[in-house]
Image (cartoon, rainbow, N blue to C red):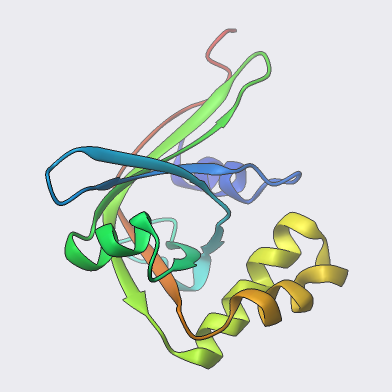
Length: 148
């Protein structure tokens, strides 16, 4: 898949849940499902598709892991035949900016629950104690229609 095909797959609806892998302090992996959106405005030479944006609680396993070690991997897949997947590796940056957090929480909520419910999700999840996470891709592995 080229970059545009990967971006389109990541943005497709119905939205797919991603599986995010982070590194625990003792080196063990931790994996958890997340909702995310693609911020194409950050696309450029060092991020062909842009950043993947999601939020998490600062006191969660993910939040602690990301604050200590920004290396992550994320997998999104379509588990219906003929099967498609994208694996994104990269580094995460964290923000607690309340305006940015609320904005992106609403965008994410709208993507997964419908535009009419996005603002409610933003109000619920764009609050102190939450982190806005930006995953800057450094490597993408993707394949479409693998069973064809």
